[in-house]
Amino acid sequence: MSLKKPAQPIQRDVALCYVRLSLTRDETDLNSPERQRTNVLAECERRGWKPEWYEDVEGHKSGTKEDNRPGWLALKARLGDPDVVAIVANDLSRLHRKGWRVGSLLDFLEQHGVGLVLAAPGRNLDLSGPAGKISTMIMALMDEYYATDTSQKQKDSVRHRQGKGIIVGRIPFGTVRNDKSYLQRTTEGVWLLPDGRFVKGQEGQPSPDAQAIWRGYADAAERCLQIFSENRHGRRKIADRLNAEGYRFRDVEGGATPFDPDDVRRITANWVEYGGGIVGGKAHNRRGKEVNPENVTLNPQRAVFEIELCYLVGHILKVRSRDLKRNPDYAVRLDASVFPLSKIVYCAHCEQIALNTQNPAARTFLTGKTGNQKMSRRYRHHTDRGCAAKRRSVKADLLERDFLHLLQSLTVNPDALPLLAQALDHFNNHNQPEDKLTAIQAEIAHWRQRTRNADLLFSKARISEDEWREIIETAEQEIARLHTQVAENQEAEVALKLTMEMVSNLVHNWNQANGEVRRALANSLFEFLTYDLDKQQIVDFKLKPWAELLMQLKVTFDKKTPPSSDENKRVLWRAWRGSSL
Image 1 (spheres, rainbow, N blue to C red):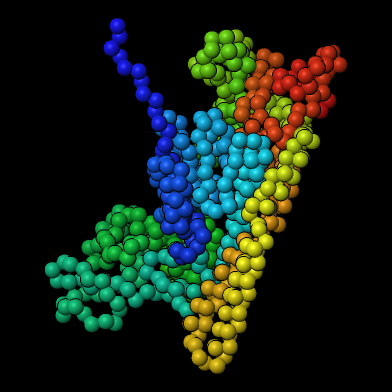
Image 2: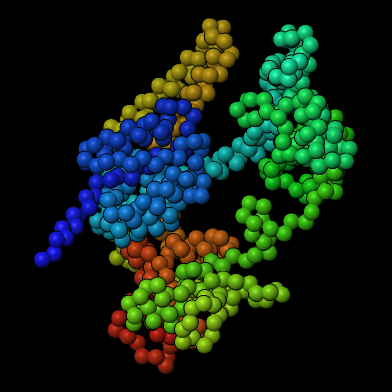
C-alpha cells in the first residue's frame, strides 16, 4: 500500500499587479502611480486575490518599449507559474502602447489560462468572445495612436526650442539656465578647507574659513577644457590633475564628488554647448569625426567659455576619434542586415520530425545570416540540427518574396466587419456616456473662466506676473487633458479606420517599411511559417488569433494542381515562386 499523499492542487489566487509611470507632472494626473495602486488594490480586494506588485515608476518609462522596464520583464517571467490567476493594471496603456505587443500578450495569456483585468472604472474587458478581443485591439491601437501623436508634438516642441538656440535636455556641467533658458556660468561650487574637506557654497558668499580656497563648478569645467586642449593627457590623467588642484564634479543629485575619467568625457563632449552652438542628439553619442569644428558653428554671444577654446577641444576630439565599426549601444556591426522573418520561419522537414516523435523541441527555425566576403543575405538552417533536407539555406530575397506573395493572398474577412462595428459600438457606449461628456465640457469652461479671471487680475495689478503665469500654465494643461478625454470617441473611429487600413494594406505597408518595421509586422501577424528548403516554398503558416478573426486566405491554385474543397486550409498546395500573384 502506497503511503504517498495525493498532491494538493495549487490555488490560483496571485494577481500580478503592474504600475507604470507615464509622462506625469504631478500627483493629480490620471496616470499617477498612487492612483493606479489604489484602483488596482481595490480590484484585487473585490475579487479576493493576493496582489504581487511590479512597478516601473522611476522616471518616465515608455510603454512602446520593454527593455527599459525591469518591473514588466520580471512580471513576464512569472506569467507561466501555476499560482498566477491574472494580470491587473489600471488600464491597457499601462501595459503596452504598441498594438502588436498587446496582441502577443493576449495570445500568451489565453494559452496559459491567465486573465487580464483593468482596474480603472469603465475599462472592464471580456476576452471570452471575438468582440471582446477586437475591442481590446481597438483600445490598443488607440493607445498607440495617442503615444505616436504625443511623441510627434514633443519632437515639434524640441525642434522649435532648438531653432531658437535653446539647449534641450540636461544641461552641461558648470552651467545654469538664465531667465530666457539660455546657458550661463553657474555660481555654485565648493570651498576647499585647510584640512582637505569640501563645503558646498555660492560664489560671492563669505568663506567658511579664512584659508579656504574657492573652486567653482564653472571654473572646473573651463579648467578641464584647458588641460584637454593641450593634447598631452588622456581622461584619467586629466581627472587626477583636476582632483589634485582641488576641483570637484557635481553629480546628478547635487553632491560634490572627485573627478573620474567619465566626468572628463562628459565635459569635453559638450564643447558645442559650452560654445553656444546647437546640434541634434545627445552629447554621449557624438563622434568627433561627425561633429567637429568643420561642420559646427558656435555663437560668441551665447557662449559660456571662449569659442576658440571650444573649437580647439572639438578639433582634438576629431583627431582622436576612430572609425566606428559597431553600434555603440548594442555592439552590433554597422553593416549588419535586418532579417524580418528570422526565428519565425521553421524548417518543414524538422516540423515533420517533431510531429512524428511528438517532440516540439525538434522544431528548428531559420536564422538570417550574412556570409563572409559580402555574400548574399540568406536564411540558414541550424548547423547542429540534422534532418532530411538536402539544402541548408535559402536566399533571403527569395523567402521574403514568397512571404510577400502570402501577404497578397490575405484579404479582410467580410464576416469580421460586423464584429468590428459591434466592438466599436460597445466601446462608445461604455466609455463615453452623455453625462460624462457634459461634466468634462463644464470643467473645460471652468478652466477657461479661470484664465479670463487671471488676465483681469493681472491687468489690475492684483496678482504678480509669476502667479499669473502659473495659473495660465495650469489651466492650459488641464484644458489639454480634458480635450483628450473628449476626443476619445473620435479616436475610437480613427482606431477602427487604422485597423481596417492595416489589414487592408499589408502589401503596401511591407513594401514601404524598413527591416525593423517589417520584422514587427511579420511577428504581429504570424505565429509561425513553415518553409521547405528543398522545394523552396512556404508550405504552412499560422496567423495570430486576432488576425484570424479579421482575415482570410484567398487561395489561387496552379493549373496543374486540382483545387481543394477547403479553400481556407493553411497548407498551400502550390509553389509560390510560380504563382501569378
